[in-house]
Image 1: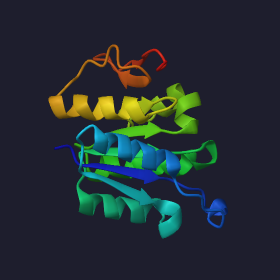
Image 2: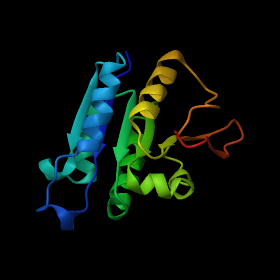
Image 3: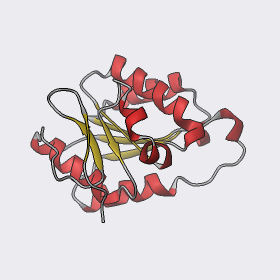
Image 4: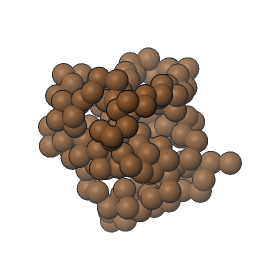
Length: 162
């Protein structure tokens, strides 16, 4: 079973405006429905965590897949957590999703710490990604809504999920 941790990133100036991370919660629910029961959610805003503190918790959980969700104003935090994950859990798959990665997939994929971007409504795409990771899939051709790196390291944008 693929151990997955979904992280809601944050920007410190928004710490007093907490809204439940409904997108991350839907991603987790869909993954569980698909049979991926080992899914955890970390909300950096609720916990008032720095990227460093979040990375410490991720190391304790030892996930196979880390999903980072971010609005544009949270992108810096997302990239910082991705970098820390890559340093401390080099075998973990790092996936970014949410509004910012959806509209800036090329920019996000320029970060070598990021393996995949889930664009748009990500519930089904993320569940497909977990299925593929569990099966050892390397070629993601046809996985709607996914941006991935091919063998040459080039970002490939699969068609949007309809």
